[in-house]
Length: 117
Image 1 (tube, rainbow, N blue to C red):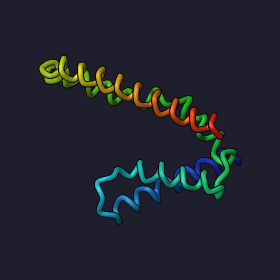
Image 2 (image 1 turned 120 degrees about the horizontal axis):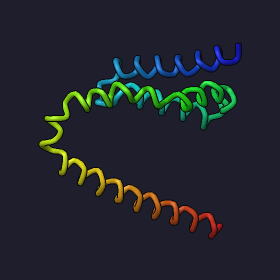
Image 3 (image 1 turned 90 degrees about the horizontal axis):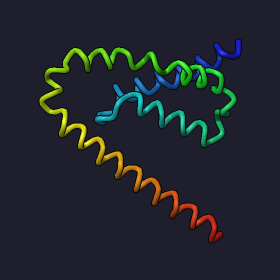
Image 4 (image 1 turned 30 degrees about the vertical axis):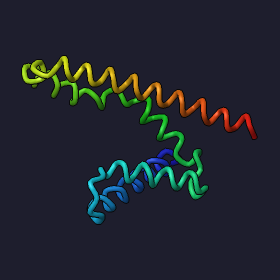
């Protein structure tokens, strides 16, 4: 019964994200609305981590099959992707390195601030 409650909470937040996506004229995906709503509920204490922990772990444990349709789609259009493959790969590598560096610097800065207190 607990897993049903957890799945209902997650589904409810997802549905509210979909409704917000339809109501608000912003170019933001519904999933992002749902994620921010879930974050707000967790940070405010209205929702406890334990209330969605089991279902969340289930979704994380079974996330891999969700990427199969994307992979098939990539394979299906491989000839078109080959034309832009090198620039795409280069952009991904460079942007990943930049994200790593910025994240590391931000973490160092935050840890330095914490140490000062």
